[in-house]
Structures are given as C-alpha cells and as structure tokens.
Length: 481
Image (tube, rainbow, N blue to C red; front, side, top):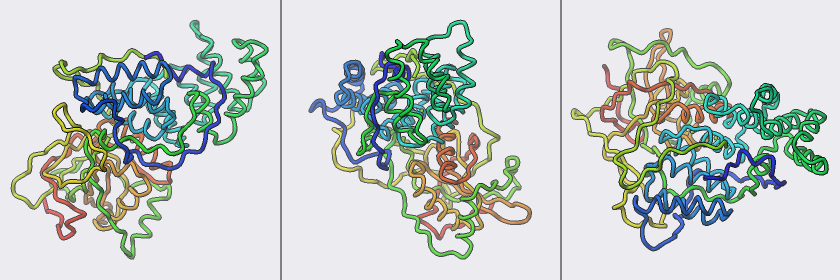
C-alpha cells in the first residue's frame, strides 16, 4: 500500500480536529454491502485489493466498505485486519481504527506500521498515555525517525528531541528526519530551532506557514489536532465503531455485576484506585500452596488492549494451507500457575468461537444476540493482574466497576485466585485471554491512565479445566486442592 501516513508531515495541510465523543470499540452498524452476495474467503483478496486502490485514490468511504467486506470473508488474516484499520484511519474513524489494529496485533502483526497506526488512532481519541506506553514498549520495531515523531505527538517532546537529534547525525539522514525534529522542537517550545530546521528543506516563502501549522499542533493537549494534521484527515465525531459481525470472536454480553453495599469494599476500591503497589506476587505456587481459582466470568473474547513503509507479508488466500505463526513476544515476568476449578467431574472440551467462515450465512444488520456458552475457552498467553481483595464477592464487584471504567476489559474473561499474604487471605483479580504481551501492556497502560494499578504477567501455566461461572452461580464455593 502506497499510503504512508506517518511520512505525510512534510506535506500535510492544516485540518482542525473536532473533539471525539466517547464511543465503544464495536458499534451497532452493519458491514457495508458492496454486493448482495455474502463475502467468502475467496472474495477477500479481491475486496482487499479494491480497498487499497480506493485508499490510493482518497476514496475513504469505498475503502472502508471494501475492507469490511474483506474482513467479513477472511477475518483471521492479520493483514486484512490491518488494512481495515488503515481505511478507518484515513476516514477519521479513530475508535474503529483502534479496534482493527488491536485485532491485527492479537493475530500476531507487530510491525512498525501497525504499531504506529494504533498509536495515532489512540492519540486521535486523546489517549496519550496509552499511545506513549505502546510506542515505548515496542521501541525495537520502530525506526528512530518515526519513534521520535511518535513520542513528540504523544507529548514527550524532550525525549523526542533527544532521539531525533541523534538520528540526524547519521550518514543516511533524510528531509523527513529533519522535519520531524523541527516539529519536535516546536512541540517543546523551541521555536528558533524549529524555524531553522524548517529552512533546511522548505522553501523560504513557505516556512512561516509550516511554523504556524506546528504552532496549532503545539497547543497543550491538542492530540486530536496533531493526528488530524499528520494524517490530513478530519476525525469523525460520531464513529459508530467496528461492526459487531467483524469481531475476532462473537462476544457474549457481560453479566451485570452489581456493586452491593459491602462494609470493606469501598475502602478496597479506593485503595486500588490510588497509585499503591500491589501485594507481592512471589514464585509460582506449589501443589501444597493454598491457591484455588474461582470460575471466570462470561467469555467475551472479542477482538480487546498504535507509519513507515513496510513490506507486508503475503496475504492469506483461500488456497493458502495455513497461516505461519508470528514470533511470540518476550515474556513479561514469571508465570503464575492458574487453575480453574469446577464442581463437574468431567472437563468440558473447549470450543472456540471463530469468525464466520466462507460457509457462514449472510451477515445480518440486526444486533448480535448473545448465546449460552458450551464449554471452556482459550486463555491466551498473557494476563493483566488488577489487584487483591478480601473476599471473592469483592473481587467480583471490583471487576464490574473496573470493566465499566475501562470498556475494553469487557472483551476479556477474568479470574480470581486465593492467596495467603502474611497470614491474611486475599483474592487476586486478573483479566485473562490476551494473545500477546503488546495487547496486555496496552490494556494495562489504559487502566493506569485512569488511575488504576495493574501488572502484566505471562499465563503459560493456566489450567484449562472446565470452568464454572462465578458471577451467575454465586453459590459455588472454592474447591480445595
């Protein structure tokens, strides 16, 4: 794809961004209909090519429609998911773009273009802390010129200047690197240096216009304006979100976990919301340790937690035997041995609910209706530990409150484990089911940005015994080991 939005800063024109209203990652809209015939895996490559052509022409509406049809036909392809994200980004639909790029990363696509695109989509919604955490945690994938620019846009102009000043000393420095440094100077309030850097590559008559453009971007907290300028788009204020039919897996409506009045719960949540350290994690428990795991809540493993030219991997087609597995990210910390106990004697085989295949019926415009689960589910490779509470009920209510404050948590299961810390019994709460470290870290960054605490951990030792339902079956008790 020729559209390379992270490089457009040198040619961008000023576009004032409107404030984005809060919207969920999935909307009630339907997949755009390009044909009365339902999309199949065989059609997906054709629709993807048309979407790329529409993007090159600047026809963002057609690009979105074709890309949605492509994902509907072959939703398990990370390249197709990333293409949909690019189409949403070009159309100014930041929330939809964020969801699509997270989907692509969940499927293993962690190249610089995808990461930087996701960060821009987050910045376009004012999620500066999340965007910065994503960029920093994936530094090894991003070229210096783009890493510095991304940091500057996310608000860390001082570090951006340091990175870019080092980059322009290299032998193969380009005008793009110099102009990125000029913008970083401007965002850092160093206007003299910014103007001098602009003069290096911009015609003298156009320098003042360039500096004025940078001045608009330098206003405190003007993240939406910065993204609008870099991408040369106008953000949409009523983004309906990605259609629910395009979720990586059909979601189940989360249970309504009401927070009843509990004497110690207010103190626990208040303590959790403050920037206080979590209880010590320690080594993985042994067979004798008192660690019993409550059942995990409704499985809502929907796709959820940021552009230099990159060579995309060959797109999967209907004739492709299988997708090659992407390299797994480095582990984060030591794994805790999670065991989900059940009062049923025979484990239930896990049943994966995958995106609709070529033989699936036509996607309907009606909102998705939740259906009962029929067994366990994949638990992913990473988890986000959220806190520790004095009782299972408190942990359950904490999940209800935290998931209401962080809507992306609704896309994941949770688990609660019993531990003993200095003679006191506590119940850890964790969001589970993350496919890689990047998505788990992005989720944790968002939680911290809202005043919470969390730790990303590897979940390689989760026991997939058939889970029971903690929220809907409150009479179930912890099973002794």
